[in-house]
Length: 120
Image 1 (cartoon, rainbow, N blue to C red):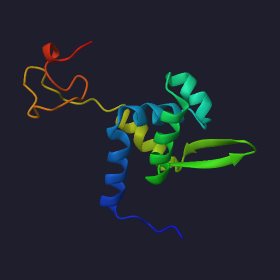
Image 2: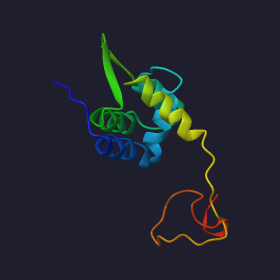
Image 3: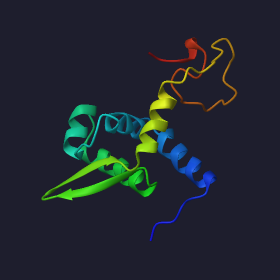
């Protein structure tokens, strides 16, 4: 039985899902509509195993749902509110000071650190 998650739990699940670049890429693809793992792996140039593992994580977080269709499984974002929230987030303009060094010496977030520190 599904229950309504607390606000903190929702934020933690969304944060975990979007913290990984591959999961973020999958979510961005799913914004366009439902997709199958094989098609996602082709579109994103990833292995099917990699895509399936990340879809399993997204499903475990409650962000995507899986619908069996014969021998295939279709994945889609679980709730239109999540679709709207992700769309709003990716359209947000962040104020990033490129002149400031990153406070985290182990930071691996692309474009987070100064341009000299980023391999393009």
